Every structure is written in structure tokens, then in C-alpha cells.
Length: 112
Image 1 (tube, one colour):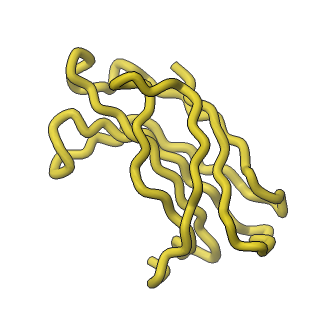
Image 2: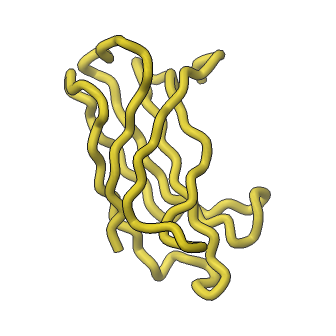
């Protein structure tokens, strides 16, 4: 199964060419205390302007309980090894959510 979408940000800046966008699909079926990352993709930003497109393949065999699954997607932008922008969790593929999602990353106050 494939999830597609874009990642955007509101700041009027160009990211350094070495920036990387990381998109993850996480299974929260057993709650926030036991997240299960089922897909992860690292995408070079390469001086592209937002919104930045992505595609990520989800191996449905990694979903812990397909009948009760609660999947979310997150994104972050890493600059020089530090997370500079990140999203919250957005529902995807479950609970009436589709396979396309447009995400907005926000600045991280203390880069990690």
C-alpha cells in the first residue's frame, strides 16, 4: 500500500542543499506508549521549494492488528543532522483516512 502527499512549511526560506525530509508511518494500535514504526523514508530536499512531494510504501504485514489499526504519519526536516522542522501525527489509511495527506511542518524550538 502506498501513501502519497506533500510536506510544506510556512517560512519563506530555502533549505540548505544537504537537508533531508524524513516521513514515517507509525502504528499506534496499542497506544502512544507502544508505537510501531511500519514505514520510513529519507528524501533529499535538494534545493526544492515547498511543497515537497513524497511517496512511502507501507508493508501491511507489519501492522500489529489490522482490525483495530490506528496508523499515523509524521514528517520532519533535518538540517546538518538536527531536526529543524517537524509535524504532529496525522491519521492515514485507517479510521476513514485516505492514502493521500498534505503535511505542514513547524519549526522545532530546540533542534534535536
